[in-house]
Length: 478
Image: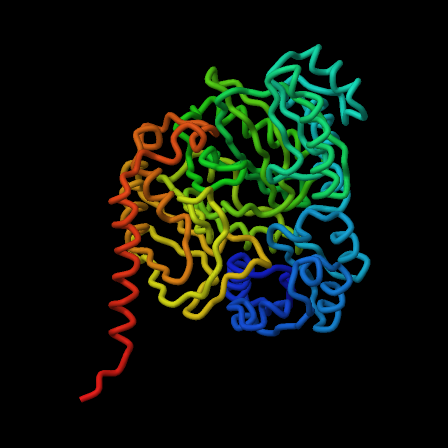
């Protein structure tokens, strides 16, 4: 097992890795930009190394700076977290070249599965269902037109080298295809320095379902019960749950076995997630592989009892998996995750900034908070607006929904707006409670028909809580 690891990330995921490493007796090293000098992950790690800069491009995305920091402190391995360099094959290769272990898949597996066209080709060879589409990247509009003529509308154009909704366009008609093709290529080039795109048949009203896998260096691949990730806006997930109301035991088994076939074909090791679209008939189609730990991994931890960071560390150090498929075949209870983002949900989810003036996180049975927030923490424009995650577990879905609503009601942050009001309102809707919803939930149901008085009440509760706490902390002159 490793003696010391460097965490090439920040925020709640850095703290998440620190927590498990500490429990396992592994020393941790944080890196930090100038903007993160006072961040919680810097305080909590055993050591911390400044890498300068304010923006990601000046700090966490600079491979040379990260490797230099790891070499300086004598780290045995580097954990990339998610985002930043976590799916960068060049970074994984640089870690190995520097004599350290990359806690993740091999550079070859990252390169193969990180390219959506290559992953799609591999899925075909591994007999994993895919939606009809182009045979690899589409080089020009004439080729794009030919694909569309063959498969029909609607279609979706996707960037070959990235995700997160960038370089993606849904097209329903001939009069929009040429402009959408040009915009998708331009956006893909700007976001990923790679303008290649491919085209697939677009599935209407799909469910977004994920399968978490673990694969060791001894040939064992495990798949876990699914995560439902359909509550999203602009292709960014906001609420996740496990298991999904739309997935039967038969679909779960078929989807899990398909995921296992694909990662075995790629000689993949460590943790990863395969994303699928599920249609109303129960048919599913492969979308992509995330070759890293997912933001929403805690919901699967909650229903399986497995610590995925611990498994990542053990796999990377060469240990065989000690759990079996039978151990994790059925979900144990139900879990919901709400992403807490610094955004104004009543103003097109625009990012918000500010300093935490007061904070109280919910507690209680089945409640978990993954957060890097503290009194005085400043949310800036430099990084992703997600600042925390609320994860709630219960023996059944109805109880889990009620517990989550109670936890959201008891979650208080003063200083900037968050997505908590959105989560609170969605959890109480008929579509969510019934489990009958799709990736179009936000387009179809948001903004909800929320009276202005309800919005004012939510704001008033937050303001009242802040004032009460401020008064409590202020000394009284006698």
